[in-house]
Image 1 (cartoon, rainbow, N blue to C red):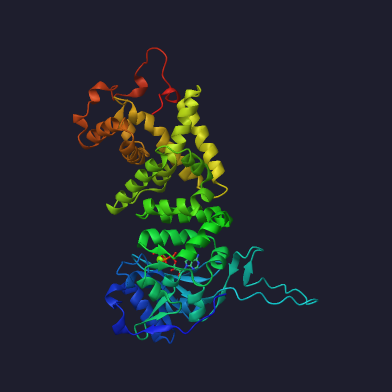
Image 2: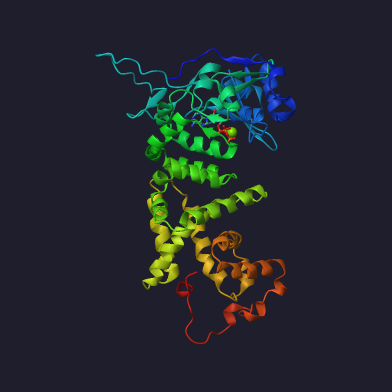
Length: 444
Ligand code: ATP
Ligand code: MG
């Protein structure tokens, strides 16, 4: 447990947070809690972002009102969460999270011989290695701040007097642009290994440096990331790769050892050298560019960007051994996703979309394409085209197909459709000779 120190209070005229930067719904909520006699703080990432001059993704509120009291104050409130009850306030365009101050795990009580075991479930529960399994007691504002992951994420904005409260030296770390856990990095990353991924995420997205002892702890504990639940790790993957900093975060994941722990198959492939790392970097850079251009990449596209090159390469190798390309690709995808599921669990539906993006590529490469309008109407066409755009950056031979399709999409008449098979009712057309099944299409 992290011990509290005297918090530093920064008065309104000494920090840059103005109420104009806070969402009106969050402000009204803070005021209503305050006017009803409760403590009400903005907490977590939004305070960090406001101090950094960034627009927060969301505004989280912490209070000493307990869930039942919050529910009585707000008609738009829904209580959620089994592990820890917290309130969601639903507004037209925003959901605000309001949580009661909570404490982290207290030190283990000394074992007393002969004492009967309580049959009440423990409020805090750690496994034998120190990972927190359950964590649900209310606490003081200080306890609430100190249970958080990093010093810069433990700052609070107090609506009562518009001050910023710094419980863990977060302002100084923010000024030095440092990511540092509250307390001992080894202990904090053992309690929750996902914090290591959060450290590399914030470093990449907020352009911060991971403080040296923290970096060492991550490198030491990276293999333990697999102790976190595979479904949670998938959610974290989306946060790190879909929000505009996939390329820098990938570099940090690779250097820290997190990549090898999370994606052993990909890591083995990367170790094969050549241009492989450069290809993935280019793909991820493209995802970031899409995001910056306001086109949020889909999760299957991200998976294709990251895993497509290894999967296609293995499918081509099987094709050389005489297995039809599509059949080989399917088997490779199945094996890869099965292995991955023990660390990062990709939902079956998303895995299926990844396969379809990759399976679509040979149809896009066939020049001139068969029935392009029908292909363009298929649900996975957009992502398959986006993947073609990525691969055209590193594979010269894909550029021609990309150009053809881009022309077809913008001005279908200008594309050389007449050279392709007629659009007409496919079913009525009689084929001569043996039909080439998609499984026998040449590899891309
Ligand atoms: P983002 O801008 O990406 O939302 P954030 O810091 O707000 O960043 P959230 O995941 O929204 O991140 O979490 C809100 C806050 O909850 C964090 O700022 C941090 O204080 C706390 N927190 C989140 N995850 C953990 C964790 N694994 N361990 C401890 N505290 C955490
Ligand atoms: Mg947040």
